[in-house]
Image (cartoon, rainbow, N blue to C red; front, side):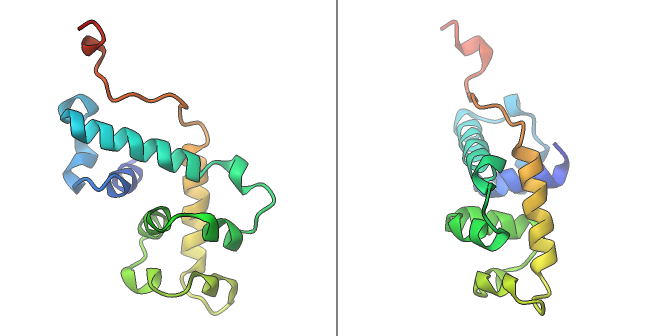
Length: 128
């Protein structure tokens, strides 16, 4: 994963920016668990299967508030844009819609091949 993608996942997991540069085994159990849960939630939210037949507007409206906030953060948009009604993306005059759609495509691509089984348990802990 690129740093920007790691920052997006850490943001969704409500971890600090420094976690984006840490290795998985350097994190404590709680941080690993939060990261795994965030990856799993984002994998489900940004699955291309869910998008089939839905417009971008409709798809964004199906996202939870936290998933939508993560999408806006990944698009490098601010709270100002996030707090605007998301139906504005249907308007041609919406200056942030292209950034949002690009971020949506990036997240679809990122989670397209994400593993379906994730664990936060270290391999050496399986033996105990």
